[in-house]
Image (tube, rainbow, N blue to C red; front, side, top):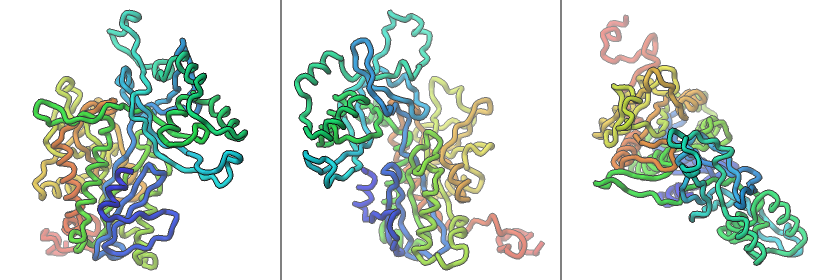
Amino acid sequence: VAACRQLLAAGFKEISERDAWVLVPGGKYFFTRNMSAVTAFAVGAKYAPGNGFVIIGAHTDSPCPKLKPNTKHASAGFLQVRVQNYGGGLWYTWFDRDLGVAGRVLVRRGGNQTDATEHAKVCHELVKIDRPVLRIPSLAIHLDRSLSEGFKVNFQTHMVPIIATAVNAALGEAAGGVATATAPEAKKRKEDVSAKHHPMLLEMLAEELGCEPEDVLDFELQLCDVQPSVIGGARREFIFSGRLDNLTSCYASLRAIVTASSDESLAAETGVRMMVHYDHEEVGSDSAQGAGSSMTEDAMRRISAALGGGAIEGADERARRASFCVSADMAHAVHPNYSDKHEPGHQPKFGAGVVVKHNANQRYATDAVTSFLFRELGERAGLPVQEFVVRSDLGCGSTIGPILSTNTGIRTVDVGAPQLSMHSIREMTGCQDVEYAVKHFTAIYLGFTDLDKQLMVDGSIGNLCRPCGHPAAQTGA
């Protein structure tokens, strides 16, 4: 929602995947899918069907405990909320934190007390209870001395947050709690929902949403740290926050496309500048709104068709081969206490530029061509660049880059700003690293089309050979 508001403020027009698209060169547009993924694009004023796209992709999700479908649980006089792990978090960092709840809710709006379903609509709404309502307490060291030697989290048994004591919950229900509708249908819904969830959880949601508890029809909620993000360090050079992986990349790509989409900037552009924020990267990207979906291919195909490419042979395929994708996901900065975990020649540092990620086994999509494009455009803008490769005796993670390049055939580079404490409830990056990411991504949007004209890879032999100054080209050898 915050990204969409910024796009609207920058002159982007919201469109829907359900509607026919009417697009014009020089236009700026965006659409959402599932309200957890967003695609924005700005069409160059000199665009022609078959011209390329420059895409910066990132993901919106982070590891967290998510509420189970039936959340109601009680033990030892406490009321608790059942949760399940989403992604691979550093779960021990979630203990003894002040936790709120955030996510999306399906709410019944309208109707009347006689028949709650009459004239009612089901609305999709976002909610955030931004106060400490849940907590996962640690076990005292006195009760288990082995904890000092290490603690292995069992998510099923250890990660069940407390929401209230049973006594106080009962007193609240006896006092009547939040006023609710009295129609028979509403009463039955309340009873059905109360069998799955503690009434006080529904009452908190209803209070935030301005509805009755029985009108909360379903939800997807997660725990969140309510401690605000801060600027830290003796010289105020660090950012301490949750979900820096990967909202930092989302922020940087958003600011970049806004900056690179002014009318003046688009006047000479022949391609399309696109930003895509995907969901579900932390669990494999295989969803309708993940990088493994058809969302990017659908958008490119429809943009080409709407701008006159539908009747032109190979317009979509030609566009893909002329395109470039930057897969932006946070990178591992070298840790001063664990520097041996990094390959000695590739130790990204704070304040030294965006990191290009390499892996010979294609865990990252970077190759010599795409790393050159990214590095060259940064250097032309006066920006430093770092390189990362995992130690040869350690496994390598992955991200959306290989998925996108496989599905679309688009040249792709995997990059990210350096950070520490990845997948902790509180992460750390440098203020300058965010600035470098914004500037580098902006340089990609502004400079790729012209640089790509100078690059020859395919079509450099035979009858397609273009003179490049190489002796073989001059002699026809």
